[in-house]
Image 1 (cartoon, rainbow, N blue to C red):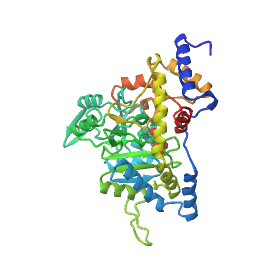
Image 2 (cartoon, helix red, strand yellow):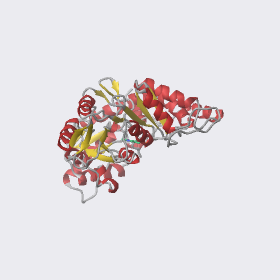
Image 3 (cartoon, rainbow, N blue to C red):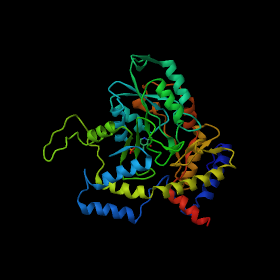
Image 4 (cartoon, helix red, strand yellow):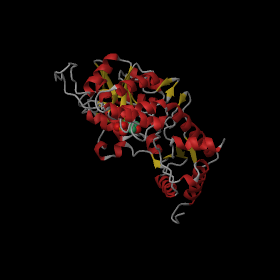
Length: 403
Ligand SMILES: *Cc1c(COP(=O)(O)O)cnc(C)c1O
């Protein structure tokens, strides 16, 4: 171990490596943070799509995946698109976000959420997180809006900037659902629509209802590191038929249906998910339940192993929710960047791909001037969260080892 390490970094480092080695045998190293899983069924559907020659914008797999996602999540409609970022961009537009509006998002979030706000010509406005869910804190949000918001002619405005606050976008961090019922109450009180960024929470539910189906719209991502993958892709979920129809229209160049004519009726996007990617999505969806069981088993092993560790605590699913445990995460009992980084160095050198959480969004150069609330909890989480290797295959390996 490096000689410059602080004494408690030394003992915390030993504790972390002991747990990692007890859950994932060192023989398995190097161990990735999150790997996708493929089998013959994926190859079969992708090959079938290739042979059909319908690899691009139309085909049966696009429709099939949309049906599977709607059935699985309980949303009335699902529209698949090229990425989770594209899904967020269009969902925000469908919720009414316009040029020069503000959109409330957590400061502790992946950059894509803030980028999507900017893609609408709007400005992200950062709010604090809740230490128990790692997501947007509804009470802190309410207090902030009471302090900076004013409702005039039915719309909420930021009294400091004069801009309209057009949407609230909670994100279910690492798969753990935020406190949705309180959050929806706050949003209704301030008359702002909710768009859920459920990119990380396919398979997670709050009081028995799937995440991404509580707001006016919700979004998913099927990037290669997510619970299931289409290589790259995303989806918009909504119960509103007109919003779903409009989302499909603007993500497919706003072409009016006609046998031969090219008539487009608004400025739109080529955000469609290719049929080739959708084929992979269908086989991945068939396997989703098994992936979730494996990830849950892995999380349960981590939880038990960390129960005896003084220097860090495993992040368990919030009460009343079922998490997909997309990424298993521990929080250091002391928020300290030097300690966090010493542990990350140690774990990565031992072949365990552990990662910090995201740099808070207002610390990134392009968002440094964006409006924000005080974010003490997000600041503390930033210096204390560590993501652990979370691939489903690690859970499967544990199951066979314990049989
Ligand atoms: C992955 C992710 C996205 C974006 O998804 P892409 O498919 O990579 O564009 C958006 N928000 C969050 C929180 C994510 O984790």
